[in-house]
Amino acid sequence: MRAELGPAEMAGHLKRRKEIWEEREKKVGQVDPPSGQKKGFAKDTEDKTGTPKRTTNRAVARAEAVPADVLGKIKGTELDTGQRAMAVAMIYPNPEKGGRGKITS
Image 1 (cartoon, rainbow, N blue to C red):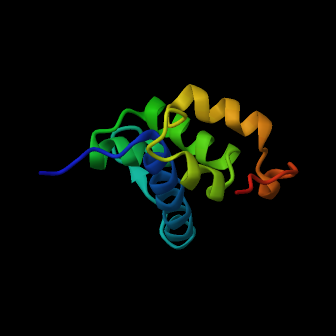
Image 2: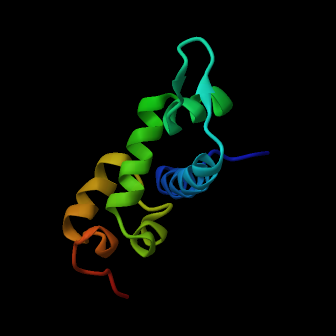
Image 3: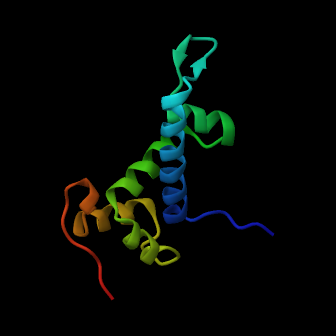
């Protein structure tokens, strides 16, 4: 039986998927045939996985706001919800995004 990903896991996976998508997008431009405009990451993910664009955008924002080591530590705990993960991001800002601090222990 397959278990669904928790919010922290989903955020990490979607962040990595976005990084790969952006690298590929630099080489190949995807165009949405009906509108003739370039497809964004969230729309592409929605088309391929059925995950709503808003959910994708929130998960990626969460993964970018919270340091990866902190996401790993909150995975499966009571802090593993979107709202609580963003609260953790305020306490332990991501150094990659110009913040300081790192969770220890």
